[in-house]
Length: 334
Ligand SMILES: [Fe+2]
Image (cartoon, rainbow, N blue to C red; front, side, top):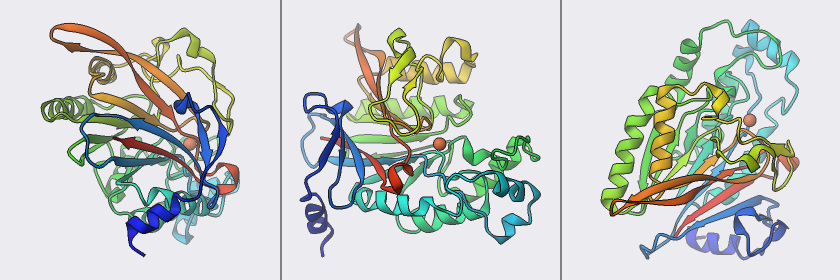
């Protein structure tokens, strides 16, 4: 069957609405009846006309698996004894399910914690289940990729730079910052903030992409593992839209919060985001494992005048929850 026909057939199955109201699509969550996949939708009108571009986000897959070679490594042998969640590559079913929906998108982005910890087994699964099937998939780093010690209570033996080097030689694209233009409409940026901050290499590249987007009349969407501080007192106890792993989260304790000792490169990236809200139209994260919707107060300058607005920040629930059904955020740039 032709891909387009197959896609139409896939979407003939009307969804069940799990939570939210039609008047509030940002806070609505659906379930595809035929496959059981949970999904949310963010529609972004650009006024450019033509075909819509769809970008599907998946997050926090947590491949927990060691192959025979991994088990020769003392740290990983220890981790296998301690880390029981999703052990034995249980997440494979979940990502296969989610990709049944995401395969119809123009771009797939995975926002971190694809590996539950740094093992050859988990990297093999990432290659086999994701990049071998959909080579253009962008994958952000999460915090879990950077450690071999999971629930062992011990610090990593190798320094962070050595662990990063292992990942760098495996990653299919620049794992700190990769951007892509889709359909003469949108730049998709997959950025690293896995250590709770932005590395010095990010600001310059983001500044250039914002400039390029403005010059060409495109919008820009940011994908990263951790959410950023909303700056809003009411978000100190932001309720989840739909519980997976947590109920309430404090969005004043995220990247950029007053008590996080924000370094200069991080502050620069945050300023770029907040000052260019006419271009930066969405931030998509994982990390919290439950479903949240927040807004970042932001602005842009038009004819020398400052215009206040907000940037939507979506936190997608972790993919393995609800029996490995799969969880997808569909971003439709119209
Ligand atoms: Fe995670």
